[in-house]
Length: 240
Image 1 (cartoon, rainbow, N blue to C red):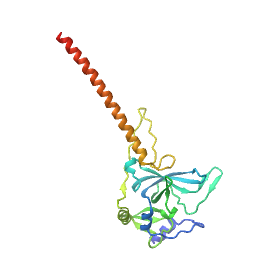
Image 2 (tube, helix red, strand yellow):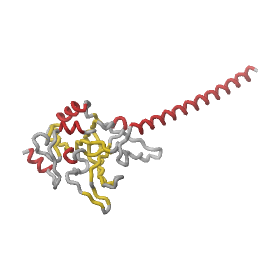
Image 3 (tube, rainbow, N blue to C red):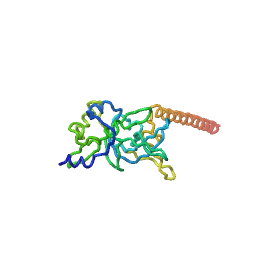
Image 4 (cartoon, rainbow, N blue to C red):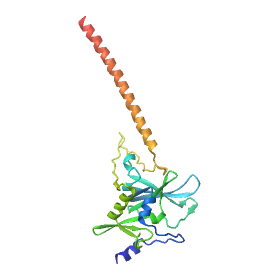
């Protein structure tokens, strides 16, 4: 009965797109990252080569492979082929569709400095709470005997076994405000243009901070030297 209900909830029109069931272990192995999160919104963009892609933004709660702790971000942009932009329209069957706030688990690949949803809808699992149990249900094959459903705990054990790391909790950051109390703009882990952040960009920030710190120390030394000179001059006058 449960599987019948899930079939009604998750069945999708796939048109001419054909998917071959792939073991969950293989998807974990081939992915560059895995995350659990909530869908926020999407928009279609035109890439450098003129093709259309849909950027979907998710707020992450757990992840492995995305270095959210290093970059300090809790959102990520995931690309899928196709979309609608002006008079251009490219429909790709099998691309998953979500409603705002929906919780999912995605396998992603990093291609040409962008995150892409791996295997389209087949690399997507919806997170369903059934009683005290949380189950991942595949977007394309919800009733498949081996890849259709898996308990969240069993899934996380597989991720740790294959990736060597647990799905770590993504910390929700409190973003600072400027003196006039206006909110600082939040930037997803992929950047506003959808391109992945790099370690180099973070290193440049750290180098700039170190240079600024060195400059502050230099000015402090100069100021202390000047004050010391004034103190010695005052002491000599007092002795005279």
